[in-house]
Image 1 (tube, helix red, strand yellow):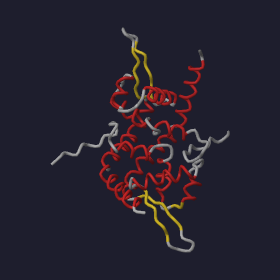
Image 2 (cartoon, rainbow over the protein chains, first blue to last red):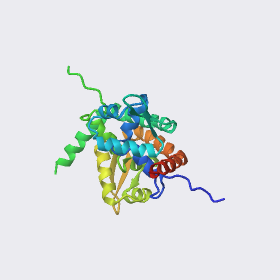
Image 3 (cartoon, rainbow over the protein chains, first blue to last red):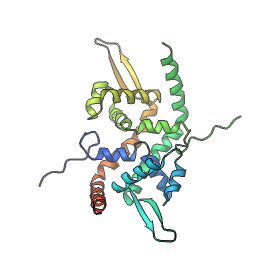
Image 4 (cartoon, rainbow over the protein chains, first blue to last red):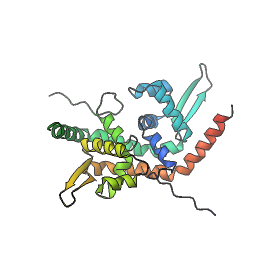
Length: 125
Length: 125
């Protein structure tokens, strides 16, 4: 039996790298975290994530749906509507993104101090 | 005393969003994780992260240095050389990225199954 090579995001050809990119990328992390609390409609997600365009949200949702992280459900009611939610796999991955976001938010003062120091040093030529 | 608004990555104007983007983005996540084991020189990082260009690595390192996540040290020896490592803040954030990468790698078979199912459905027009 052929051995399945282990997934390795550091390898150029491993498909896990594209999954990582969809989850992080420009918007993936925010979309997955926005869905943590339950199903949302397209417009709800767009309002939650300030600054995302319809095109980028739609592309991000399709990538995450294809990766099996987000599911898309058409509700047959009047008027019919579409809802997005995390799959079981999405729910498994979401906490890691949530921890990352909390760390970034909680440590923002330290980052801003570092940025100021960096800019002061690098403008002094 | 003016109240400091809480950091919120969902807000368009909050600087925490750019920090998140530098950490995730196309390469940030891989660079930070590559430095988890200790200091590395530029060429070491480039070899570790297959497919990254000199230009992208250099830009990613500068962004992370400015954010106070990576530090750059010039070793005054012959020949002199430059080393990159995680700061205390970088070490605090790295485990969240490492968890994310492990989740992505470990769940790759589920993602590949989902992709196949998605492609089968979406090509059947």
